Image 1 (cartoon, rainbow over the protein chains, first blue to last red):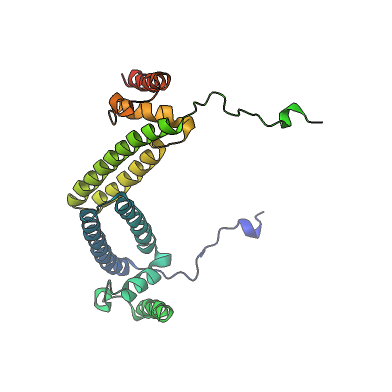
Image 2: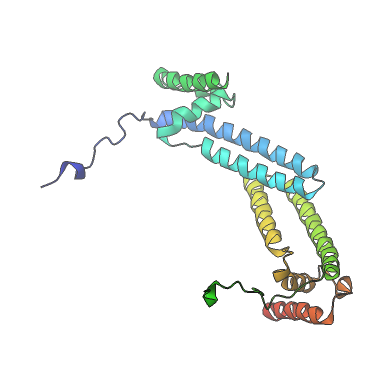
Amino acid sequence: MTSPSATPERYPYQNEPTWSKLEKAIARKAFDAALGQELHEVIQEAKRMANEIQKSSDLWDLEHHLTQRRKEIDFKYDFRGSRLTDVLGRLLYENRLGEEDLRGLPEEKMKSIRSFAQFLGDGAA
Amino acid sequence: MTSPSATPERYPYQNEPTWSKLEKAIARKAFDAALGQELHEVIQEAKRMANEIQKSSDLWDLEHHLTQRRKEIDFKYDFRGSRLTDVLGRLLYENRLGEEDLRGLPEEKMKSIRSFAQFLGDGAA
């Protein structure tokens, strides 16, 4: 006898979009390029800030800045399928990728991605 | 009626060395000079590390290094009277100050400071 609550759900995340292997490969390429570019920017910032350090408060400002940037990047670049639409939408909103970088994704996913980018744009306006 | 345990102790830290104003001024000068020198070293390290960053792991190594150094320095440079003998002893052990920088402190305090430096030296040997 099995109680209903102990029965494994066959579809635990019914609303989660599924990503085919090809779609994931397209997303991964755009995601990695945006991440690489953002890390490159943080490296350039760090070099500039370090170069300009004159007193200890500048030093700890650099440390604080790097910690903040690391946390932001860790949070932002989440490749799980459950978050990927929003993640790509944010990168689109931030101009870290363009729609052309996502060529090959089905229109349904592009709509969701554009919609999240639009949502962020509306919030910032 | 007052129970003994509720009576405020007149000397709550009986074993804590007391520091006169003059002694504190001598200690402060040596302490500040050592701290300034150590911060200068960390700044130079940070500039060198930042300059050599090539990939993101180098960037996060710099962040981690700065966090560690900040915590070490916060812990090490504690000017409370209750810790000052050990703090100066550690700086003496690390050659961040010399006995000549503490000229004017009474021999009793110098003995305690030397003794802690010796203790650290024995531990490291």
